[in-house]
Length: 324
Ligand SMILES: Nc1ncnc2c1ncn2[C@@H]1O[C@H](COP(=O)(O)OP(=O)(O)O)[C@@H](O)[C@H]1O
Ligand SMILES: [Mg+2]
Image 1 (cartoon, rainbow, N blue to C red):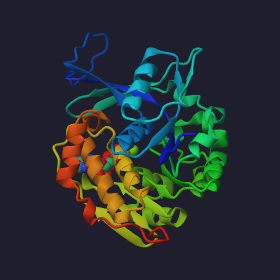
Image 2: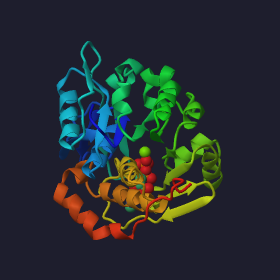
Image 3: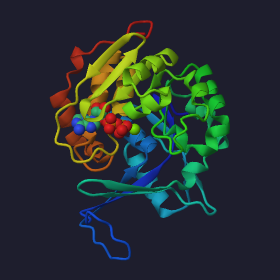
Image 4: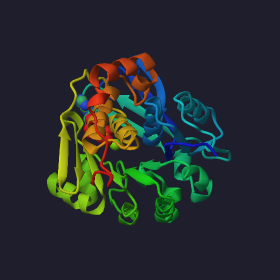
C-alpha cells in the first residue's frame, strides 16, 4: 500500500475556457472566441494537483467515464505527481463531467455537466488506501450525490483511523446547506469555506457571528475572503492575512489553491498563522495564470514565486496539543 500524506476523494474533470467572446451571447449567431484553454478543472482535482506540486504526497480516488476527456483529466492530474491508481474508469453511458467557462469583461457563464461525479459511490472507495495517509481532504461536498447516503459513515471511519480531516464544502447548488453536513462536521478538523459559504453553513448574514458558530463545531475554521485575503479561527484565537498583491489574471481555483497551501503546512505540523499565510500566498499565486492549475504546472515559476515571497525559517510548529 502506498504511503501518502494526504488522500482525497473527489471529482475529476476538465475546464474548457473560451476567451475573447462578445460581451452579449446572442442566440442563433455564430460567435467567435479569440482563445481556447483546456485545463484541469474541478475543485477536488485542482486541490490535489496543487498540493502535490508543493511537495506533499497525495493519493486521489474518483470515478471517470471511459472517454477521451476523462483520460486527459487523469493524465493532467498524474503529471502533477498525484497517485491516480485508484481512479475508476466506468463505461456505460455517463461521460466524465465537463465545465465550460465563458468569461467576458463584466461577467462570465459557467456551464457544468456533472457526469460521473454524480455517480461515485461508497463502493468505489478503497478505505485502506484512504487511511494510508495522515490526513484526508474533501472538496465539493454537495456535488457528491452518490456518496451522500454513506457520507457520515465515511467520515466516521476515516476519523476512527486516526486521520485529521479537512473539508471545503464549496457551493450548494440546491442552496439548502444541509445533506447531513452537521453530522459530518463532527469529524472535521479544518473547515475551509469562503465568506459566503461560511454565512450559509452557519445560517446567519453576519460573518463574525458565522465564524463564531462554526468555531464551536470545528476546531479550525479558515475563511477565504477573495481580494481581502483570508482568516483562521481556532476557538477564540483569530489570525488574518491581507491579500498578497499580485497581477490577477483569473480567480478560478484560488480557493482550492488556498486550501492546498494551508493543508501543505498543516500536515507538517505548522501553526495556524503559518498555514494561513501560506494558503493566502498560494491563493494569490493561483490567480496569476488562467485556470486553477496553470501557475502550479510551471515548476520554475512556482519555485521562483515561493522563494521570493516565503521565508520558511520564520515559521513555527504547532504545540503538542495541535495549537488549539
Ligand atoms: N484578488 C486577489 N488578490 C490576492 N489574492 C486573492 C485574490 N482573490 C483571491 N485571492 C486569494 O485566494 C483565496 C481564495 O479566493 P476566494 O475567491 O475567496 O475563494 P473561492 O475561490 O473559494 O471563492 C483568498 O482567500 C486569497 O488568499
Ligand atoms: Mg471555493
